[in-house]
Length: 361
Ligand SMILES: [Zn+2]
Ligand SMILES: [Zn+2]
Image (cartoon, rainbow, N blue to C red):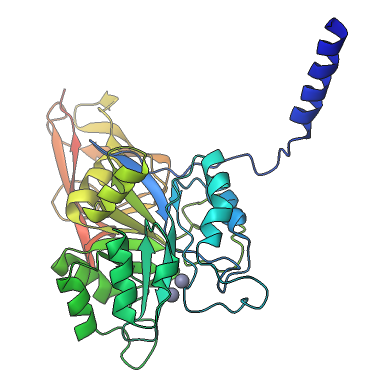
């Protein structure tokens, strides 16, 4: 009996040892939670071999987990399948093939697809589908309706991408909007920013989205300040599918795009407060204070002074601490410094007004 157990233990040991150790390291993305919400790092637009991508669905899960994402969707085109002679047309396959891997890696992974029509109307991602196949229908509005009957979250992709209308807001978009069939827009897709989409999101109460729209393999190991996927930060009550969807429907998002954050002031402001931490002065002389300002997030934050106190410009590189020396006649008093965070956009070309508060003695 003992010998049998020993043999079993050896076999189990060998099995454990034989698990591949590669791709099991995750590099976290640094944007802190905000009061009341978890900050989920999400990419809701990517392709696989099941449309015009060049990777197998499970690879997308491995890439995303390694790069610190919390939630992703595979949004293969319904209407465009250049590999259809090699792979069967079943719009649910990419999700079905990767769902188990997503569970193993604890990624939130709703079923999704991209409705793909010439402009107008353009391309639309549909998330939280129950079944992608009913979207495969000739009538565009019927496809959008099918998605909505499944209670999907629908957003307009790369709005000014292509076509003679170049992403104009047309009657068909009004019809979708009036029916409550359109819930968000990509403000940023890959390396492109769409100011019209940004404006419309603000005017029409649509959710701001930022996505990678990757087609080839993403060879990044991590998302870094100078090289990262375009993604959506979603402020969810919990790290669950239900909470994720509720947050998207309610528009609680900020887009991380190149060296910018883009979002509604009500969400970008609390994020700034959590990212930029002003310490209590560690030294006060008769005419100056020395204080540390920590930037805990993955964005280099640029500040331009709008008040009369503090340096004209402050550069706070990602995940560093800045030592500030302020001259003052009353070093024991609190000090307020008014700035604009020029790369945290609350509207096109409009930075977030912020106040850095140095506590008094
Ligand atoms: Zn598209
Ligand atoms: Zn796409």
